[in-house]
Length: 118
Image 1 (cartoon, rainbow, N blue to C red):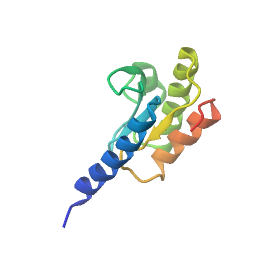
Image 2 (cartoon, one colour):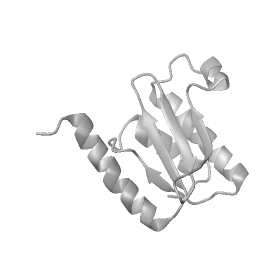
Image 3 (cartoon, one colour):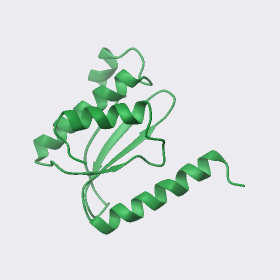
Image 4 (cartoon, rainbow, N blue to C red):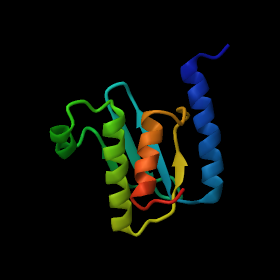
């Protein structure tokens, strides 16, 4: 019986395979207990166009803890602003097998509110 990490990675592989067929820019996220990360990856999957995380010095000053819903919303807003700066409006959301709940949902909602469509 697979454990939770193997199950998450299996879900992530399935999602990434479907996104790869579409050849669209992918908003990939990763979360740990302490931080959350977001990357915009081009359609070929070989180049990171922009990224944002709670490890960035500007955000570390603002946020006392990077593992909160508030921090995820700030990262979502920041990655959406960077995407707009690159002229990217539509992306595919790759939640990396994580449940669409809590910090993942907060990041996605903030990105949508700031102009990204997915």
